[in-house]
Length: 67
Image (cartoon, rainbow, N blue to C red):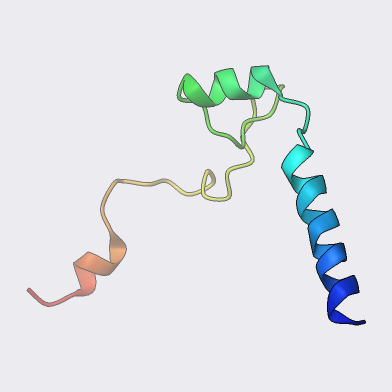
């Protein structure tokens, strides 16, 4: 592909990205701003990858480090 065609394609993609506006999920935004996780679902369950672990607030790496 020549430089002219490549530049035209990049310009076309940039224009599409500039004017693309996805549908805003205001309920999701409200949950996020209210302190809910962005991974919370509509049924109230969480898909947080770390939710299954009991976290006591201590860093396990710090306990094994010498002082």
